[in-house]
Length: 120
Image 1: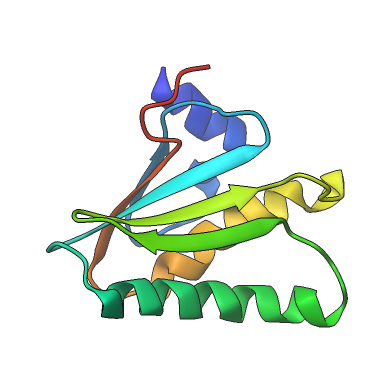
Image 2 (image 1 turned 30 degrees about the vertical axis):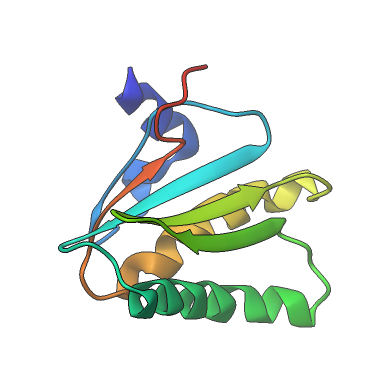
C-alpha cells in the first residue's frame, strides 16, 4: 500500500539520491524521519536545517509561506515536521517535494520515511 502513497505524492518522479517513501497521512501535517548511515549527530541535524533554510530562502524573500517547518534530533534519526496549515494550496506540493529535494545534498543520508507509523 505504501507505494500507492508514493505515487499519490509524486515521489517516484523526484529523482532522489536516497530511498524515500510514504507510510500514511496525518491531515495537513507531514513528519519526515531522516535516517543516516550511522546514528545522527547534532552536526547532521545542522546540515538538514541548513539544507531546508537554503530551500526556503527564495520563498521567504517573496513572502510565500510554505508552512511551519522544524527539525529535531532523536537517537536514531533527524525529524522534520511540516505543518501545511495556512499554506496556499498551489504551494503544498512545493513544500512537500522541496523538503525531499533539499535533502538530496546532505551527506550520509540513506532514507527518509514520510509519516512513519501513520495509517490513513
